[in-house]
Image (cartoon, rainbow, N blue to C red; front, side, top):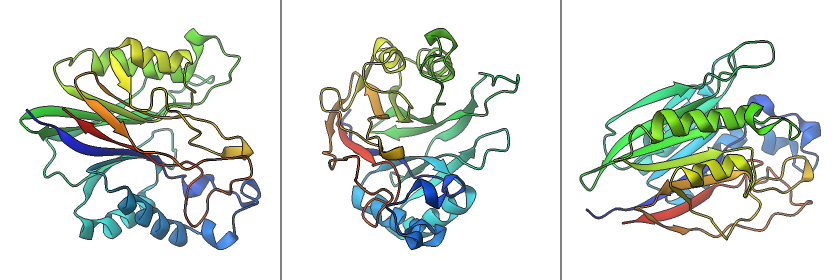
Length: 260
């Protein structure tokens, strides 16, 4: 069967995590929720993606984006993190009715014993007669000096691979989101070892400019049966202001055309 669709992944920066002093190069009016929601909707429309995976989505921002994107044919679902976290993941699409969705909450625990509350939102689609499973996630950041086997993001990635991807190898998979890891690190290598391909392999550029440190931490993985044509990214430097009117988050969206 033929598959030809565009996929995007975008950490939109939760309003709850914005402190003006953290974004000294951004005008205050661009940090207000209503202003940013409108700019985010415009940015998503520019991506022209059939499926858009969002991270750091809050109920208010999800409602605003749904309203703004409905005239462009998008509908979607959101799942909020646990432990009273204000944000979660969402998947918006314009490819007809989905086959269903589920929120998989990871079992990794914080140092006080509570579960982290992070999740992967998995949405199923029928694309050209084949089942496409899209997993949108925001893997937890952990200290870089933490041993790999104890790293919370690595625990979440391993659970996602073992309990979802490897248990359904017949499906076409797309796994994307903010991984809080960089190319070549063990967490990223785990997805490659699971038989998935990195759409930006060999073409990584910084996707985030938090704290004035450009880094590549957003990923779009896909089944080996699919072929990716990733979109070029604008250059990010230490002084590149983010959020800005052109880029209303501290992350860039990443996107690719996937073919079979």
